[in-house]
Length: 478
Image 1 (tube, rainbow, N blue to C red):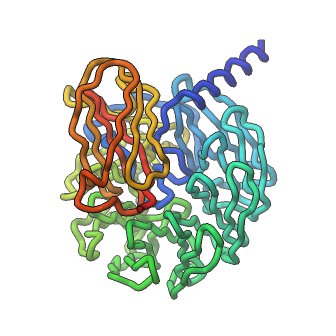
Image 2: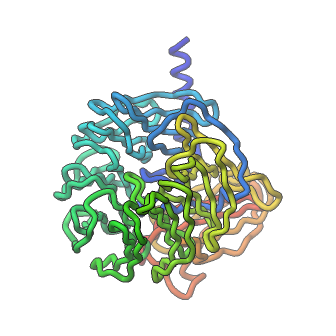
Image 3: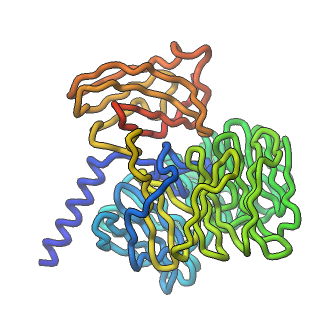
């Protein structure tokens, strides 16, 4: 009987791996950003929200969600990584992190068929099979508390006693650079960025050679966001924007009387819609604040002051910013442009950064997990839907032209739109009538625009009737 259950579980997971749609949460960082923007992919979920599932006994220091499975990193002796079916709540497997103990402030990195995880006081980065939960390989490191993995798909980057570049999926070390700090790196198409050991660093991600470094105040925990040609990062009580080619400071914003910004593994920043959100954990009076700045010049757009200490790293979804207040354990949502309150839930002991995946909003409780969905409307249905099947985009990464293929369930109009990481429209493909069955659309992007697509990360939104699907796509440039 036990063997039948195990075989059935493996079969279900294999089916999910082979046939399931690819969602945004396919990277190590919360909300799927190797650029660490904390910008969620797609338009959903937007308020008004409704609680669609309340998962009991799901304690997690950090977690990821991917293809219907929750990967929960839990503290203890040892730390554990547990895979849980979101549909049934059944534990699929659990992996004990050797030698670890204490809290596990490490975000599980879901990359292809692997989940990468480390623990507090552990001695390695472990790659675990998403199907079986068995270890595939381990790379020796020191404790990985608040030292999460980021990945560009072909390699994983993590800080140990050195910054490591690890070949995927094999697990071989490609290169090392001597930076030892409790920090999570940031990656773009060419470089790895860190704010550590009183320096802001840019390391060539292919060779591991130093591109440049410059003086910075913070020694650890600081987050760096890369957005086009600009880096955003925190230094003590100050937020700075810098040119990513040399680290030259473009502007800075001081958060008055703040004693702490960064929230360990996930940082303090979120970027979207032309705004930079800054969570100030505690000021000199013990009060948390949320500041929203104009990303172009650092001027204050609006500020929210909470009633006590602590606000976790915010998450941006379209024109909404979600944040959890530590003191009252409250989930908040604000209009990104105006700061108007659009959601407040104090019906549980919420904590951590909200996670968006599979068209849902996931928020941890002390020992539960709340799953929110967008309240149904007649306007659109968010996320992956039955209208489109077997969606593929090629090539990935792309240079200019792309081919989008899928199987269509019904006779309907299909349109495409390309957005940058701030949600701005870059190009649009007019809707065309498509018949049921296999569809193959070639989009000559350079013919739709005055210029070429600049290198970077974009989001392709495909509409089929009233259904919407959004996928991340990386352009390398001409």
